[in-house]
Length: 155
Image (cartoon, rainbow, N blue to C red; front, side, top):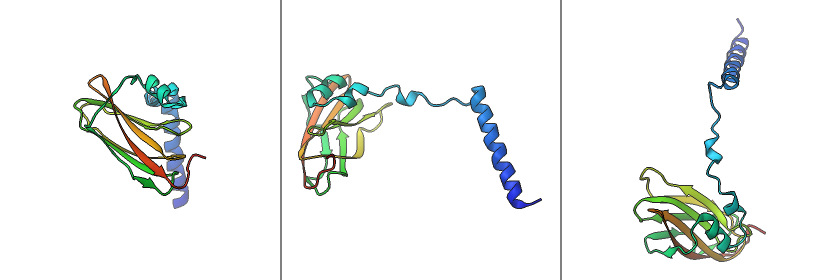
């Protein structure tokens, strides 16, 4: 039998079996990924609205949150940001670029006693404060750092 034909039959048979399993409900599509999506938070256009939609209004500043970011970013299209939370029972870490058109850049859930560390590359349109909003033990804490942008990324 021709080797190409044999490979073709294997691939189509496997794809057919997978399609049958999906249609029969034996393989579930992961719908839980979007269940915790904070639509209102990501559509907010001001820092105050972001904090309200995160449930972090009145959050207190903490020295146990460390933001690692460049003081001056040469290109606002790719700004590396890392947040480390030394707070016990860290549950969530959000990154907010205050002067962006949509300030909430990222939200990460930390579960099961995971390490309070996240890293992301975000876009920034102009020089502004980058905020880290951390939920730990049911309370919210913040820290901020100014990042200067020389070439815009959101404009």
